[in-house]
Length: 225
Image 1: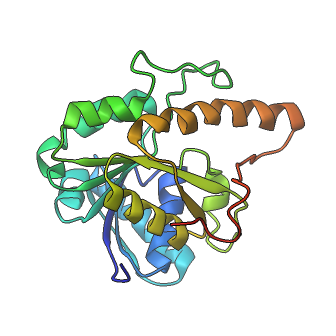
Image 2: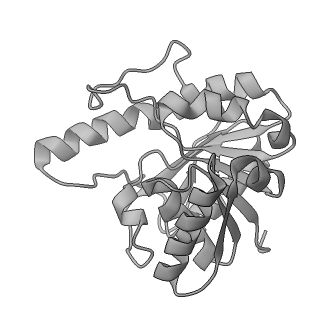
């Protein structure tokens, strides 16, 4: 698993998506910014390429970007999660989908408010069926730190999914973004990372810091297995 991947970041014009896209492009992956508006995606890619100092990213309408990708990363708000994916269902077939969605319910985003399914990513897998390998990751990473590709981020990434190989791909991408991916088991365990985001927002506000994160202790420099 050393070859470059073709990655489409759907919602890549936003803060978290664009930060991940920059880091992966600089690591040598072929990255496309996906948006409902192809012109907006192209403009975002041009802006990010300016920050990187090289034409490493491209932009496209989400359906076109997803169709040509090995891995799709969903970085849209919870309110648009299901509708966005429903519109891409046909082109997602057979692919790995890494979902970064957190079920935040404004205005009380510092209070855990999980959906009836407990996990919004589990609900997405149920909607898409077994033809798409859904993985949960990157919910607990500071978006503003991701936007600086030179910034060292003191945060681990919990990676949950029902397919072992798909989890391994997400863990690799975490490493290529300068983070440490931790195998957190089946997709049902995504509920932990989804709920943690509200807790981290509370911690940020209480202690007046911008970017609380998580670390898993006892693993050493790299996780086992």
